[in-house]
Image (cartoon, rainbow, N blue to C red; front, side, top):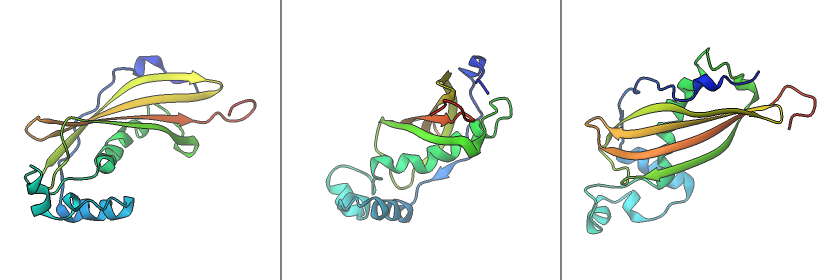
Length: 152
């Protein structure tokens, strides 16, 4: 199936609030091997100017991935999830994610195209505090592999 280019620009309603907790940051830091004390120790974080512990940069995936799933669930997009692989991920941080943040994610489709029998869809997730402060922009490209033949 070829993605409809009319999808580009489609935005979805904001997600529910995700409250960032110290324990979640510490768990994520341990999982990715981020051993800087600013991820676990509030005093260490304050010593370098943060109000509380800060998340490793890739922690944004915890919030943005679920928000991006709204695209996969949209019947008008029509991606076959059984054929989808994650092609690319980028984060642009406007400030660090911190314990106590209450984040809301808004997803927009930025690109939809077909290449060599595969559908490529780029989704942008804007993470902001519930008060509207920009925190991070996450951009991911999903690849729906072709059904066979010469598709990669």
